[in-house]
Amino acid sequence: NSDRRKLVQVLRAATTPSRTVIMTIVDKSWARPGSILDLFLESFRTGDGTKFYLKHLVIVALDSQAFQYSKDIHPHCYHLKTAAHFKPFTSFSYLILNKRRNELLLEVVELGYSVVYTDADVMWLRNPLPHFQIPRELSIACDSSLSDASSEGESTDGGFGGFFHLMSSDVTVEFFHLWKLVGVLYPRVANLSLCEISRDTKFVQSAGFRIKFVEADYYGEFCRPSRNISKTYTMHANCCNNLESKVHDLKLVLHALANPEKSKDGTLHQLFTSGNTLKCLTR
Image (cartoon, rainbow, N blue to C red):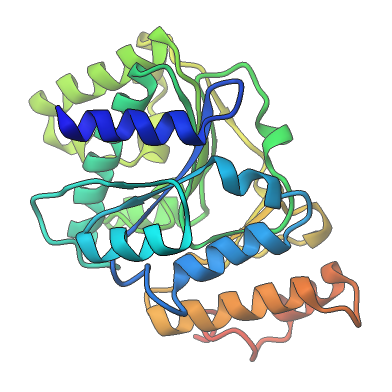
């Protein structure tokens, strides 16, 4: 159909020689002037060794407004049509997005492309991809808020799996088909995030699906700032359900990266230890 043809065109334009694309998903609240998307793209331009990967980034828009804005500022965009209205920061919306994202990921890997997926509120401080060159179907950074979200029966941006590498292979395709089939019989399974299903050892092993959980210190998050910022490749603005606060804090992170007067690592460390600078960390 026409949507699939458009997806193929975008993937062909954005792919690396090894048939890998970087992908993020936004809606109109995250894709407008001064938004999360602007900061996300800026992190690629200012990060250490990350600017090169902009040409391999595909922005997936959930609505026409986000799609139009994304096209205005980036060459590789795809409109993922959804039946439901997506409202950020709600458990129900994350369930919808989780399901729709999995369908898209399956389609992409079936087309023979591997995916580096990154939430748009994940700032790229340094090139994280060499750390992901692991012969596994999935390499994933699971946030610390996963256990809290699971215990409360909710899905949050923390437990969602905001950064991962998914290898295109027959095993990956079969895993997603099996997940979908089991989800029909057991709806709770269908609603699990990629991080949550990855921790179901019995299910994963039955599919022959190999997973590498990357070291948390390499992938920072607002929920649990890294103790050694010099090792951090990315910074995820999770544990923050206020969009204005999220944008405010991510601007500070990028400003710290671009600060010419102090070392980047020292400035970032100060951000997360001062106690009164970041709005998202104010309790």
